[in-house]
Image (cartoon, helix red, strand yellow):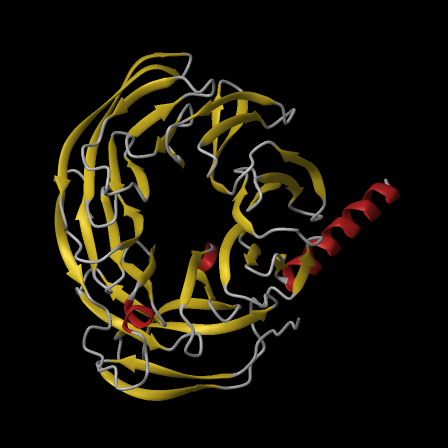
Length: 419
C-alpha cells in the first residue's frame, strides 16, 4: 500500500474543441487530505457506507450482511450488528418526532429499522423480492422502497402507500424527491414521474400518504441509466452508459436538453467505448455550471451559454471514474478504477479582457486503495471516506485544517487554565 499526495501529472485538456497537452507541474496541493485514518481490516468488502446527517458517525454495511457504527472523528468502532445474512444494498436515515432511525435493506430480501440512540432493532419485514431503499430527503418521516413496485414505509415498516408497477423487467435503480411533491424514478432505460400527496399532518408527522403515477417516458435512454442527479429548483439530470445526458424539468415532465460531452471524440486509441463515455455523476456549481464525470473524462457545461466551456480527457490516467463528490468552496473529489482519488478546484474568473473563464484545476491526489474505488462519501468539507474491493476503508482529512483545529483546541484549553 502506498500513499501519494500532490503528484504531478500530464493530462490532455480539450478546450474550445482543440485537443492539446497540458502539463500540471510540481505544486503543493491546497487540499491533499494527507491526514489519514485506516479502519481496522474487514473480513468482507463494504457494500454501503452511510454518513449520519450530523456527521458525527457513519455506518458500514458489508458483503456478509454485517453492520458497524463508527465515530467519524476518531475512526473507532462503536458497535457491530449482525442481523442480515446477505450483502447490505442500501441504507437510509429518517425521523419520527425527535427520534432518529436507520432503515437497512439487504440482498436477503429483508428490511430492518434500527433506533440510532440504542442500536436496537425496531421492526423487520421480509419481501418476495430484493428491496432497495431511498431517502425522502426533504421529508424525514418515511422512506421509499422498491423491489419491482414502489412503496413508502414508516419507522414501524407499515406500508403507507404503494404503486404496483406493470413493467417488472425494468427494475428500479434510482429515486429522487423534488420539491416534496414530485417523485422521479429511473429504471434501466425509463424515467417515471409520480406525484406525492401528504395528508393529516399532526405535530409535523405525516399520517396519510398517497402516490399517483403521472407519466412514464419509456426508453428515453437507449442505453442503461447510470445516474439520476437533482440539480436545482425542479431540474434534474439523467445520464447513461452511452454518454447521453438529459436535463429534465420535473414540473412539466419534459426533457429540456440533450448533452453528449465527448461525442465528437474519435476513439483512435484502444479505449472501450463504455469506459470512455459512460456517465458516472453530474453536479452543479454556482447555480450555473454542470460538472460531468463520464468514463475517463471530466467536463464543464455552462447553462447560460448552453456550451461546454471546459473538458479534461483522461482525467485519471486512462482509468474510468467511479465517483464524483462536490464539497464546499467548489472542491470536487473523483475516484477511479485504478484506486486513485483526485481533488479538483473549480474556478470562475475574468481575464484581462473581461472575458469570463472557468477552470478545473487538479490540486491533490490520494493513493491508498489497492483496488477500484467503489464508494466515496463526504464527512465534512475537509473530510472524506473511501473504500474499494480491497476491504480497506480510509478516512482522509485535510492536514492543514486538522492542524488549525488542533491549535484552536490547545488555545481553548490554555484560556481555561488561565481563567
